[in-house]
Length: 158
Image 1 (cartoon, rainbow, N blue to C red):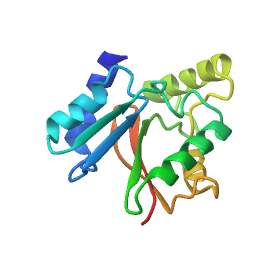
Image 2 (cartoon, helix red, strand yellow; image 1 turned 135 degrees about the vertical axis):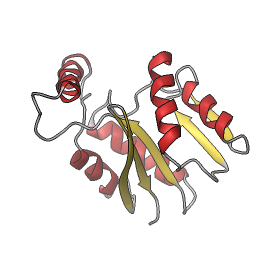
Image 3 (cartoon, rainbow, N blue to C red; image 1 turned 90 degrees about the vertical axis):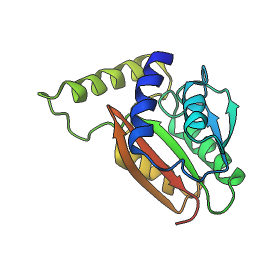
C-alpha cells in the first residue's frame, strides 16, 4: 500500500491546501506512515502524530463502526478543527464506459464479500455519516480528487 499511498498523496499535496497552517495532523490509519511523512515534509511547522489503526478507516467498516469513530474524533477535536478523510467515493450510478468507475464498483463487491459491513460509500453516504447526530459534525465537504480518491472534510464548526 505504500506505493499506492505515495502516488495518491503526491497528487493530494499538489491540489489540496487544507493542511496549510495546521499545528497538528493526526494520521489515524497511518499504516507505513507514508501520508504523514509527506505532509510534514511539505509543512515542516506541522506536528505529526501517527495513530496506527487499519490503513482504511471507513472502507473496511460498517456504518455503526464509522459513526463511533467519527463521534470519538468529534469529541477530541478543538472547536474550529476538522477530520480529513481520503477515500473512494462510489458513484450513485455506474458509468460502464469509465474504467475508474467500474474498478470502484469491483472493489465495492470485494468489500461486501470480505469485510463484515465494509463497503465503498457514495457522497450521500459520507454526508449522512457526517451529519448523523451521533457524529455531530456541523459541515461536510468534498474537495479535490486524487485519481480515484477524494479528500473529504468533516468540519466540527462551519
